[in-house]
Length: 359
Ligand code: GDP
Image (cartoon, rainbow, N blue to C red):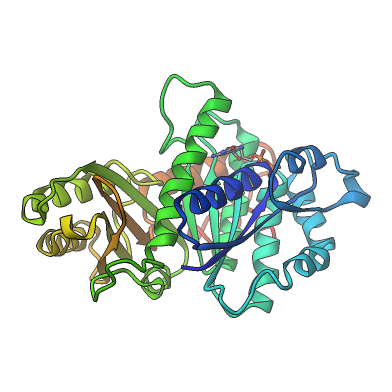
């Protein structure tokens, strides 16, 4: 899927960079442009991307200090400049736009929903969010920021692919090392998904197409991505069980939003050497995902690439019912309550009044 990336805030800029670098290192050509936007000059300087500094008149390049209302405000007042920078980068070949940000901070959290809304007004291609949920041990302010931002961006974007910072973290690392490792994992996994729609080698009927990614995300709301990989045998027949077990791990223990197994739709992509991918294995795994997710809209396909391993990517659309997400929204709501007066009863997750929408 030919994609243009816009990283907003520090996490957004670093992630957009990691994704663009992965795509270029692998020679995939799915990332057709990347831009970083921030209100903090120091966070833009180390990035090898084209950048736009917003909110100079209000915060003078120093960032918004975790205030996502101010983040939304500076993005709104400089929206024209950002949209101007994007002119010419989002060409007719682009099939999707991804706005990338961490939801817990200020600039990305506040700026992402505003920018998504602006982009939706101008462009016909789907506008997705790639959003990072703060880990459980991040403080209340991060949870409140993320709750408000997610509620708003889930409404504005065509879909929000959510990555929980606790999901793909390895233990025993410092915060900074942890982020670098998580960013590499996100870049590899999301990068493979985008590239899967771009396969040119060994193209057959069973190869994934960009439209299948777009259709899987069509239900809107929140999406998640699962990933697992295994050693492959040279013979496809020997890989039927490997494909099944890898797809199982990808869904049950490898998703970007833990416990996101109920879904409206799914896309199962098996990546590896074309001759090692068993059609029977992919079909069996696709059926299993249908049963497990309770969705009748489960697509399946191959992504031929040079590798001694087989990888299973599962894109899940419409995962709002995930326990982790419900718990997160509950926690964001409690944290917001603690910092202000009582508000009326909730109705449902996206329409309740206890988490203020940013827009
Ligand atoms: P902003 O610059 O104001 O948008 O804020 P940041 O991007 O620095 O932080 C927002 C949130 O993103 C934090 O709550 C963290 O959960 C997360 N975060 C910050 N840096 C990284 C990073 O490099 N990788 C990942 N995965 N998450 C990050």
